[in-house]
Image (cartoon, rainbow, N blue to C red; front, side):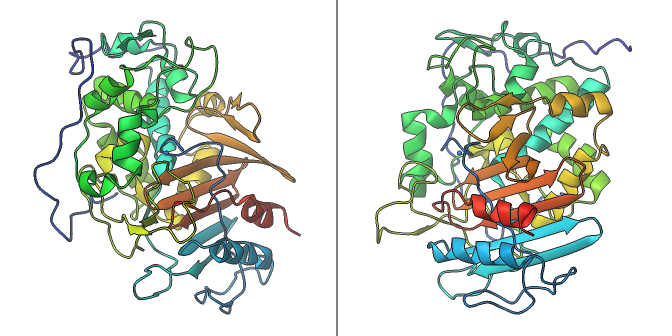
Length: 424
C-alpha cells in the first residue's frame, strides 16, 4: 500500500462557534453561465421521489408526445403512473429509462405554468441530494488511491471544525459522514434556515451565498442527534463536510474533482456543478414550490404556487447542487453499479447499507437501496426548491430509471417505481 498523503494546511480550522452564511450583494446576471462538462431535509431519503415514463408512443391526455418506445408498449404502466402523478396536481414530469441497449423517454404535464409548454425529454433540472452519490464516488476513488481512509477521523482532515454542543470531530469518521451515522446535526433542520430556504422568506434570500464553513457553524450551534455510530439520521451537513475533506486531500474544490473524475470520463455533458450560478442551462423547465416552510409539504388547497427556478445553489453545495438530465443520471448510475467508476472493494463499501428503521430503504455510502415487490434497486432521491428527482438502477447496472418533477409538493410515488421495475 502506498503511503497516504499527509493532510494539507487546514483552510477550515476555526474558533468554536457558528459562522453565518454571507449574503451576496449582487444578483447573478441572466442568462447565467453554466459550468462546462459538466431537503424534508434537503432531500429526505425516506420520501420516494420517483416517476418513470417508458410509455406509449402517442400522447395521452395532458401528456406531451413521447419518443417511440424502443421495446414496444411494455412501459405503458409506467406512463400511466406518471400521468397519475401529474393528475395529483404537480406541473409536470419528465423521465428516462435505459435498459440494456434500449432507451425510452417520456413526459407528462407542463414545463411552464404561464404558457403551458410541455416538458422535454432532454431537459436539465436540479437533482438535489442525488449530488451526494457524486460526492461519495470521488471520496471512494481517493480511498482506492490510498490518499485517505474511510476510518480517518473528520478531525484528522478538518481539525477543530466539528466541535461544540456535543459534536466531536475526533470521534467521527469519514465513513460515518457518508452513511449518515455521524450524528452531526443537519443545518437544514435549523428553524431559521428552514424559514429562509423553505418558507416565503426564500424569495428575499434566494440569491444569498452560503459558505461551507458557515453551514457547519450553524450545525454546531445544535446538539448532535446521537453519539457517532449509535444511530442513523439523514444530515446534509455530512456531505458539506465530505466535500471539505475532498478539498483538503486533493488541493482542489470538490466540484472540480467531480468534473475531472466522473463527468468528463463518462461524457456527462448535461451535468454541471453550478457553484454560485443562479441560472439554468437550456433546455429546462420552470421549478415551482408552495414555500410552506418545509420542503415537500403540499400546502393548503388553493395556496400560492411560486416560481423558484432561479436560486444560488450554494444553499445546497455538495449536498445538493448538481444539475443534470435523465440521460446523464442513467449513464452515471449504470456506470457506478457496473464497476466502471469504483474498484470492487470500494463498490462493496458503497453498497454496504445501514437499514433505515420503519422504511423500505437502507443507506450505504452516498447510495440508497430501495425494496420493491420484485427486488432491490439502488440509487438516490433528491429534493431542492421546486424540483423532486430520483435515479434508480438494478444491482447489475443494466436497468436504470431517472425522473424529475418540477414541483416540490408531490409526495411519494412508489407506483411509478413499481410500474417500471416490476410491471409485467
